[in-house]
Length: 199
Image: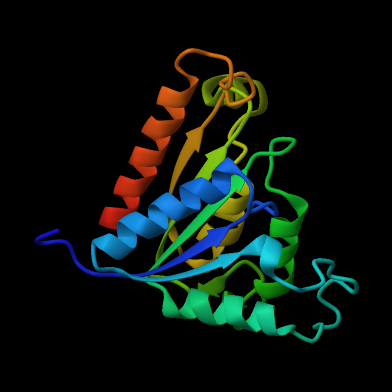
């Protein structure tokens, strides 16, 4: 794409199951970004080997497994970070939360300079979160509020990322709806185009 700055893009599939529509969307984003000439790295959380439990909180820093170190290195390398995950009970899957619990550490993502001040060590990077749900996103927002705040503001924004989000929903009954296949193909095209533009 003429005039589009080439970026280093890191894609994380946040669904533990690679046999999922989330995996299909990760593939569409990766395909679009690669075809547009962006440099792409990808990890699937279901393939990663790490303990997601922060056993001692922040009193003791657990030894990092190789996949945690690789994840941190990909974050530092990337200009743009893409996370694709399903909304389960109005939040991210537990394994995805565990990945951030283990990796989003002081002096990697942030550094406190005072009681209420901190340095955002990943400032200047951008992120896109793509969430799927069996619910209608607008209805979910009305009933439960913005369920992306935990990741969008509390984790990524806290470390300095400028974050965009897109929620796609009502998949539970889309299999028997006459427009179900059309809707899924449309979502795939949207995500593919995000990839081409690395946004």
